[in-house]
Amino acid sequence: MTEERYDVVVVGAGPAGSMAAWAAAREGCDVLVLERRAEIGVPKQCAEGISARGLKHAGIKPQDEWIANEVSRALIYAPNGERFEVPGDGYILERKLFDRWLAARAVDEGAELRLLAHARRALLEEGRVVGVEFEDEEGVHEVRAEVVIAADGIESRVGRSAGLVPPLEPEDLCTCAQYEMVGVDVEEDATHFFVDNETFPGGYFWVFPKGDGRANVGLGIRGSEAEPGLALELLDRAIREHELLSDVLEGAKPVELNVGGVPVCGPLGRTYDDGILVVGDAARQVNPITGGGLHTSLVCGRIAGEVAAEAASEEDPSAERLKEYQERWEEEFGRMFKLTRKASRALSNMSNDELNALAEALDQEDILKLVRGEGVARVAKKVVKRKPSLIKHVRHLIG
Ligand SMILES: Cc1cc2nc3c(=O)[nH]c(=O)nc-3n(C[C@H](O)[C@H](O)[C@H](O)COP(=O)(O)OP(=O)(O)OC[C@H]3O[C@@H](n4cnc5c(N)ncnc54)[C@H](O)[C@@H]3O)c2cc1C
Image 1 (cartoon, rainbow, N blue to C red):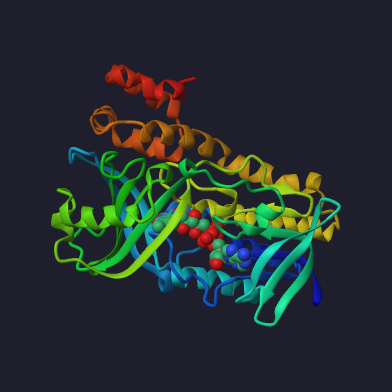
Image 2: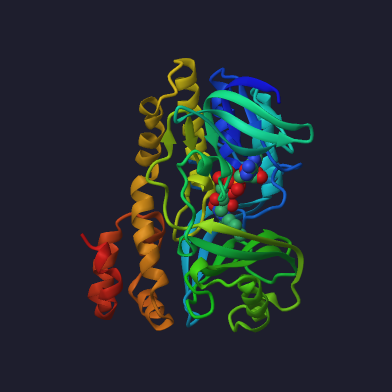
């Protein structure tokens, strides 16, 4: 067994890890990134949508090489087919190219990337994380670091072994199945969201167009409702039979199948400890209403990289020092996570009739507010005034 030493070791070269590695390397740190896959961004486990606002917030300028399509609105369909338009600029990415571009940017900044390097656990000494044990083709290695950043996705083996990441309960995640399809006949300047709790319990169906008839077509359902294989079965059935979808998807053909889980329980209460930070899906930093985690992973990744670099240069990787990471991401997203989590629970408990009634009570501004976790109490009061029968679902959002 060989042993090496770095200022910062990042586990996982997804959006959160590559942003963290880039930010730490930019601060002049020695950074090692461990990635278990042979190829960054493959397989894709994403519908690839991000708002223009989210990308800007992350400090990333849109690049032609990884943008498949630009959209200017979201179209949301209630169970009865009524459709709402919510304006907002955004992009459908090519995640395989985007993730690779982000990783290359970190490497250009000086980070070292090792592929096929599978982290097995955090190394602990006297209760402090001091490095990572990983395995590659040559065997098992230990690498020491002032700070370890666990950006190792929903399973977060490293976060779990450090005692920071508890197991996910089925109701804490959405199980997803998606095809990338060709021949999709849909308005391509919009993302499309189909809400229907009877057919897609606790989740929704999406069509995110990538241009020229190509689109990500998928669904997520609440994990507590999902038996093995059910998400894919519902996807196939909806494509064939759902009255709002079968016209749009008639003649469409899959060219890729993607499956994966999204944590929708809101972020971990604690994302730092002595010698370690947890970020992105590993920290469950995902908007529970939309299941979108790109914007938050990128911004939280940057913050994690900056704080880790400062702590490493001060030779103080204590939990007390690293707490700044949690304070900074909470300032950016804490309120949004809290309110969208509550609103998401309310939405998943509604029947289709109640969702239709809710849709009648809301205008596009209200929908935008709900999704962003802004002014939720005001929106809930308006719902109660217009549709008093919904009070049991939205009462907890008021006050
Ligand atoms: C079907 C689906 C659709 C989605 N659609 C959208 C969307 O349209 N918009 C949006 O914003 N979000 C979407 N999301 C969520 C989004 O994909 C994630 O939030 C985002 O990828 C999180 O980035 P991350 O870097 O935290 O994790 P990941 O992207 O999961 O990256 C983690 C990386 O760590 C590596 N890794 C894991 N374990 C180890 C280990 N032990 N050792 C070494 N490496 C390891 C993995 O190989 C991977 O490269 C979707 C998710 C799913 C499943």
